[in-house]
Each structure stands twice: as structure tokens, then as C-alpha cells.
Image 1 (tube, helix red, strand yellow):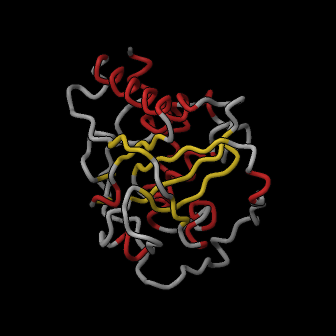
Image 2 (cartoon, helix red, strand yellow):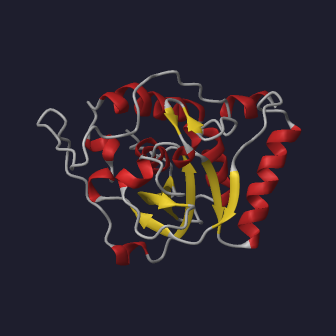
Length: 228
């Protein structure tokens, strides 16, 4: 029980920065923020992988967390959970849609199971803060675990029940929505791998990196050897 609570500790952030750009235009990477060009897999290279979908706050950090997990081939930042078609970052981030910032996780089930990804999901954010993660407030930052079939639904609900039975959150209600996956919209290109490309962004240094480091400290066995 103590080990489970350590792995699934709630992340309490009290910083004032937010997961939003100050402009509607594309954020330009400065020379200081430039990093080694990432080699992204082609769509056809991902056809053999399974997919999972989660929302747990600002997708800049959530993407970085899941990409550090072994068995995960690629993570895409985007929008899901709402009804509006082709939403934009300005619309979602401004709370003008019913979507949440979310991620699409491509993973190899021979290396990591869906159950383990659910554990990563709950262990890397606070599912008891309604419509909020750290400094980010609004339904666009709500906690959602999406399921594509009945088996995944049972895994998610079973894990939530285990968290409740073991009182991991000291009686605080789990606010995570468990909903059937319908549609995922990729976020704009400049949001992809944002944490890697903009290491000096104030939000990244003050919120994303500390959150990523806490996850890595608690889930060492799940990390890729080259996780940055």
C-alpha cells in the first residue's frame, strides 16, 4: 500500500504560469532553445502499434511523460472529449469548446500493457482536482481516461476502484471522466514535442520539467534507457 501511494502521489502545483501562449501566432524557437532535431516516425511506421488516449492537464507535459515510457513509440498532442469539429488551440485553450487537451499514445502491447499505461496516467497527475491541473484551470484541463472497448473500460474502472479501496487519495473523490473514445484531433505542429523544443519556456521550466522529473523518480522501472 505504501509503495502504491508513493507511485501515485498527487502532484500539488501552486505556480502562476499557464499552459498557454501569449500570442495566437506560432511560437518561435530561439537559438538557445534549439535542440537536436527529432526523428519522427512516419505514419506507416505506426500502423503496427496500439493506441491509447488520455487527458490530464497541459499536453506539453503529458506528451513528455508518456514519451519517456518504454514500449511507447510515439505520442501526439491534440484535442478530444468534445463535440466541435477541427478545434484550434486558441479555442480549446480559451475554454471555448467542450474538448480537453489530450494525447494519443502509440504503444507496443508486447512491451507495455494498457493497464500499465493507466497506472502511468493516474501516477503522473492529480485526478482529484476537478477541471484543474496545477496552475491550469478550466474543463479543457480536466482528467479523462478514454476507452475504445469494453475491456479497456473495465481496466480503467477497476483501477479507479483499487485506488479508492486503498484510499490512495485520503478520501478525496476521483474526478476522472471515463468516456468512450470517439475522435482525436491533432494539435498544431508547433505543439508537438513542445517540451523538448522549448526547454527555456517559463512554463516548461517551472511546471512541465518538475512534473516530468517527479514521474521519473516514482516510475523508474517504466522508463526508457534514453529518457531525458
